[in-house]
Amino acid sequence: MFRSFFRFFAVWHTLVKYGMDTLIPRTPYHFIVNGLTYLMPVAWTRELSEPKEVRVRKCLEALGPIYVKFGQAISTRPDLLPPEMATELAKLQDDVAPFSHEEAVAIIEKSLKKPITEAFASFDDELLASASIAQVHTATLHSGEQAIVKVVRPHIEKTIRSDLHLMYIFARFVHHISAETKRLRLPEVIEEFDKTISNELDLLQEAANGSVLRQNFIDSDILYVPEIYWDYCTKQVLVMERIFAVSIGDIETLRAHRVNLKELAARGVTIFFTQVFYHQYFHADMHPGNIFVDVSDPENPKYVAIDFGIIASLNDQDQYYLAENFLAFFNRDYRRVARLHIDSGWIPDTVKITDFESAIRKASEPIFGKPLSEISFAQFLLTLFQTARRYEMQVQPQLVLLQKTFFNIEGLGRVLYPDLDLWDTGKPILEKWMKDQFGPTALYHKLKSHTGQYSEIMTELPMLVQKQLKSNHQLKQQQNQRLIEGILLGFLLLLLLQPELWGAPVTRYALGAAALLMLWRIFKSR
Image 1 (cartoon, rainbow, N blue to C red):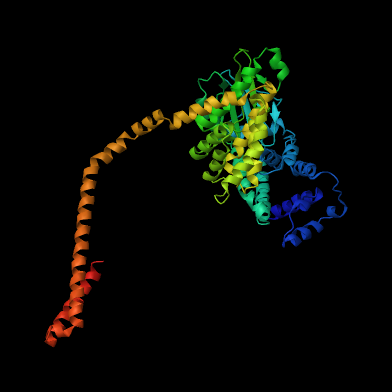
Image 2: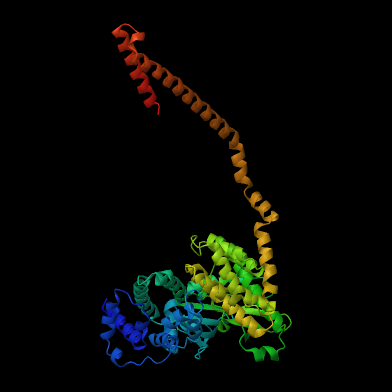
């Protein structure tokens, strides 16, 4: 409790130092912001001469690794941030000092419940890489395989939970400031970030992610996923096969090995579309630090993927709308793009579709003024989201990681081969997927897969039809009976109201009793 309280004021002090309070829209509750700001002496002497985008980046860097990771995550969100802010936040670097070799050994021994010498034939003193969540060492198994050993930072989970708690508080406060801030759905953005960071903290989850990816590409000649050594994996330690390959960002070395960069770039696009549309399960952190290249066959280079902490998937509906959006866009069918956004629920159905279509056309046509090889998928998404923001597009958390991954893939592809035609590579995959999912053959296989259910229904169908006919017959009989009873009741009432038709009072009493009985039968039958 007290720790969270003091952490709140430490975070608020940093926010005020960089003028983040000045970015909050004025509302009737702004006196709370002003009061908290003037509690901080730094507010009395601060200078806010730098652009707000630079101040936001420096503020996140000062707050620490988790805030840096959050800034990196939202920097690929064109639906959340204006371009200038996104560009500045993309400069954030996950630069954290490593923890000691002794601490790493202690964590490994505690997790594996055995001495380090019993776990590994050798464990190198020098670490391979360090990041905000974990760091990586190299080792050799007793069976002779060279391995990578990933170890979670000590006490990092407690720090992250504390900061996430504060993030939720700030997000809920900003969410209720105005209609514009509500549209951002910041609490949901933080919730998605929470899920992502929680998965990165759990190395067993990362190991499972890696195993699924490896299985999906087990016979692939374009992507290799290292083997996970499950006997050595715990929540805090992950051990997997060590691969010797060239970083995809090392273009000079790739050229020195005479790697076919055009083919390498095209294969990257193929991997992305295959994961998203065929596996529905994709590596969502494909930056240069996590992607390597096997150069043993330069004309047929193979990707090597590592770091499986951030994995994502799309449900069937989002997958369908995404594919249809790409196809409609490159066919310049802007009415279809607009309709898909409304049908999917990404924008409200109260939006006038002709206005939205016109806005999409205005934003997209300049893109088609370029050769296909110069058309950017990422630019298309950016343009589309910026346009949709004006029409109250709701943030779609399930698409966050897809957007980020797509930007990374296209950026890598264009660095490798600037003339890469993404549409030439991606369109056949999309069209084949649409045919596989919704074509005549797909319909036949879907019907065939439900043959057992249909057979059961067919055997019960005659009985169901007979029951329905019998029910209809009984209903018809009841309706006819009520009609006759209604006519008789009307006739009896007429006799009661015209006593001259019947002479004796006793007769009228008998007819009255008969009318009441008939009326009671009618109401009882309902």
